[in-house]
Length: 421
Image (cartoon, rainbow, N blue to C red; front, top):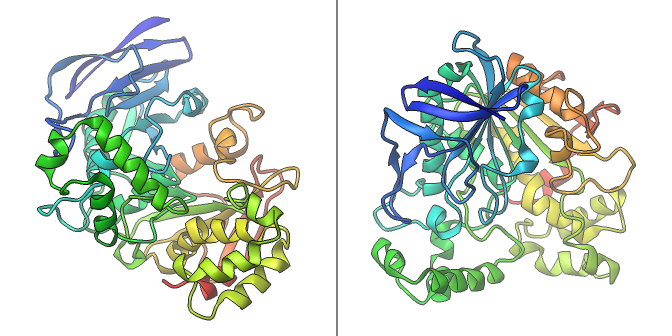
């Protein structure tokens, strides 16, 4: 490995080059004075050591083609990781970006604060303010100021996230957050909590056994906070315990959005219930607590049986946690929307996260093929390669290798009819 240097408004950033790509690891884009305080932009004019990944930092990493210069104007993909707002980082090696660099796309992997530090709202916070989202907003502003020096085009940035990361992508695309820091968005399997923070505040306060104030949480023993959060999470195990929400597509800015789901997102989570033959009874009993409209259970279960009678609970979890939000964005966003549904090559269930190896060219998927190539083209051109969802509710159904693609009409109609908005 050789060193690589870029001088930009943030300062001189020292990374490494492997001959094909330059890697700038764990650049701290903000200053966080205390775990529960809002971040501030990082100081400028620094010498920044970006030669080593530091996943514990709230930071971003950049990968560029080895020969990129400040006059290249390459498309930029900013990736926001998932993980239930509890796990993951900007330094995840499975989201390594060399495959994008080989196609002339600069990738930024953006980290943010997790669980309590990122998502507890305090009395003086705006109702739509979450520190996790604000962290990402500051990261995007850093990219806007500095990415040109790395070879990127600040006017051609695509914001991409999966699961909890897709939640943040859509949250940052809301009118009250959108500042033009990205041109288009991709939300892969977006997950939103079924209840707002205000509705769960009492439960969290009881689990932590302390007032939900900045001073109380800031002074608490981190081990006590971790134990309390585990209790709280267990009480909301079938959902995101915390996260930005609720999702109202009418509040989104007029930006292009690609929104996707896997066909069988959470079959694994429902496997025991379905194996015991309890799927239908559980959906009928618990459905109204997990988003089903009153009186909708029978028709919904009939539609699920027509798709896959062996995985009724798995399909219900998939629809209630992910796919109803996909449909909501496609139906209600003011800008252009493209929808896709992923299936597996073998015909086996397509689970949550199963699209990521193809996206990041991890085995058995190769660079410049499958979803990796499709995302690179979209970042460069803004054309996903199939018709928009409206006016005909057209959806692309494709395997992860993109070899078996077909256009289908409105595969989530049964979800729209069953779940409350």
